[in-house]
Image 1 (tube, rainbow over the protein chains, first blue to last red):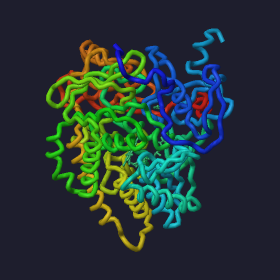
Image 2 (cartoon, rainbow over the protein chains, first blue to last red; image 1 turned 45 degrees about the vertical axis):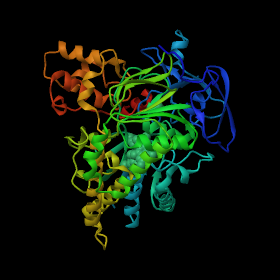
Image 3 (cartoon, chains in turn yellow, orange; image 1 turned 180 degrees about the horizontal axis):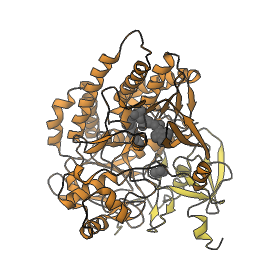
Image 4 (cartoon, helix red, strand yellow; image 1 turned 90 degrees about the vertical axis):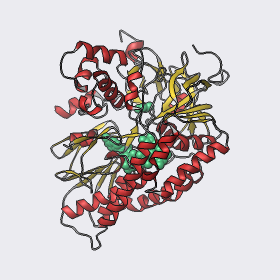
Amino acid sequence: MGGGGGRDPTAEGRFIRAVPRDAERVRFTIDGRPAEAWSGDSLLAAILVTQPSLRQHEFDGGARAGFCLMGACQDCWVWSEKGERLRACTTPVAPGMAILTAPPMERFPHG
Amino acid sequence: MAEVVIVGAGPAGIRAAGVLAAQGLRPILVDEGRQAGGQGYRHPSPGLALDMDALMGTEAGKYRALHADFAELLPLIDYRPRTLVWGIEERRLHCMRDGRQMTIPFDVLVIATGAMDRVAPLPGWTLPGVFTLGGAQAVLKDQGCLIGRRVAFLGASPLLSLAALQYRKLSAQVVAVCDTSPFRDKIAALPRLAAVPRTLARGIAYLAALKSARVPLFHGVTPLAIEGDREVTALRFLDGRGRERRITCDAVALGYGLKPETQLAELAGARFAFDAHFRLWLPVTDEDGRAGEGLYLAGDGATIGGADAAEASGTLAALAVLHDLGLRPSVDERPALRRRLARLRRFQHGLARAFRWPGPALSRVPDEVTVCRCEHVTAGDIRRAMDADLGPVDVNRVKAITRCGMGRCQGRVCGPALQEIAAAHAGLEAEAVGRLRGQAPVKPIPIGLLAEEHA
Ligand SMILES: Cc1cc2nc3c(=O)[nH]c(=O)nc-3n(C[C@H](O)[C@H](O)[C@H](O)COP(=O)(O)OP(=O)(O)OC[C@H]3O[C@@H](n4cnc5c(N)ncnc54)[C@H](O)[C@@H]3O)c2cc1C
Ligand code: FES
């Protein structure tokens, strides 16, 4: 499947910022990789403007990027380094956040 | 004085709070969101240079009025944003705010929790790049983001063309608007749609605007698949004439109208009945929104009516509260509001006819398609479980066997599809397979919090 077309391969993010934001820059990390966003961005937007998906589904292992974008479907969970579960579409990004796109337990099976 | 609590700070909840505050009550207004306004009149997050007047078009005045009125109302009410109500027990709301547990006692409860998109599954709908139609609008208003560069709109809803126009305004390429309902359904619905000529004219204007912008617009399509390996690359469907088409895109907005958020109403004891217009289970209320002793429902959380009906029904429910508390305002606005609401709801029935939920056609969802995104249950899993199970057909039983609808979204997303797939497989009417029951917590909360609560 797949074939031609779809997302522009030169573009990194899935979401496109259509309007500028007048706010502070926020530095955070996604799976250890440094990233930048604006204060006021949701975690979901902050992540999806830089990469094509948000996380891997717990059961089917498929890539997911959220679905309802309004706090109802719970298909946008990501984790903080402490293991807190965050609903990315309704959680604002904050300076210094260290986001994991898979639950910490899966990454460190014995920790 | 009676403690009145309103859940939901959308147009319905805000108008209800306004009526109560004007009578000197100080209602508590609880909302999960960070900002008041609800879905349709969602306010951009801080610092976003979004021209809401341009985006809201003809509805800009109402959007501004609601937010201005809310700002004036703020000192007169006890507004609690970022507060999820996750359970109701004996006149107490169980809530979570910023990760902390709290309860709010009430004498009178007004539930105005709004709605979310109803979706029909199709192959590929779990791929990154597929979002709900309402979500595509929400992320635009809230975050100033587009869900993709080349966006297809698929489903059956008047919001398809509205959202497509909003996306075009912000420079997205709208590659197709694919409406699964045939054009003749729109004609058939005209008598009911004529109940609100202004909104009908608005809908026709959207279609004309799409036409003149040369956006490919299809009626009566049969969706085949969203294609892609790790992400959306194309949408494949049969057009109204049965010709197969494949349209390249990087995002699909999917929506078949709205379904009310009724979980709290259920916990509060509301009764439900299957509504033939919407093919949805809706809570039963009287014409003013009463659903039980001290229980009132308003807005899209009661029945789908749109933003105008949400404001009217919120006002009406609050007037019913005052009336029942023996606080009668000098002028009785209720009869006029009831008439207005009846007209707005007749119009919504027209919309449900014009943009019909495919319902029974979901029997054709292929076995391998995921129905429940949370628990990864396919249509085939549902059918096989029903074939093996000899008991009476009931969606709660199918849920118990397959886990469809048991996941973290509590069947919000898969519920309507499960209803149709199960009914069709059993050869029964949709309502004959029962109603998926909900339970607390209505949205996931940290496990520690439940322990804290019951310690
Ligand atoms: C995603 C989406 C996008 C939409 N976009 C448009 C649009 O662009 N134009 C249009 O005309 N209509 C739109 N609609 C239709 C919309 O339903 C109505 O316009 C209108 O917002 C309904 O008003 P309401 O007050 O009934 O509910 P809402 O406006 O939906 O408000 C309900 C409120 O209740 C809160 N809530 C729900 N559950 C809980 C809980 N358990 N605890 C605490 N708070 C809770 C929510 O946070 C929300 O703020 C949209 C609907 C959805 C779902
Ligand atoms: S995308 Fe649905 S809850 Fe976040």
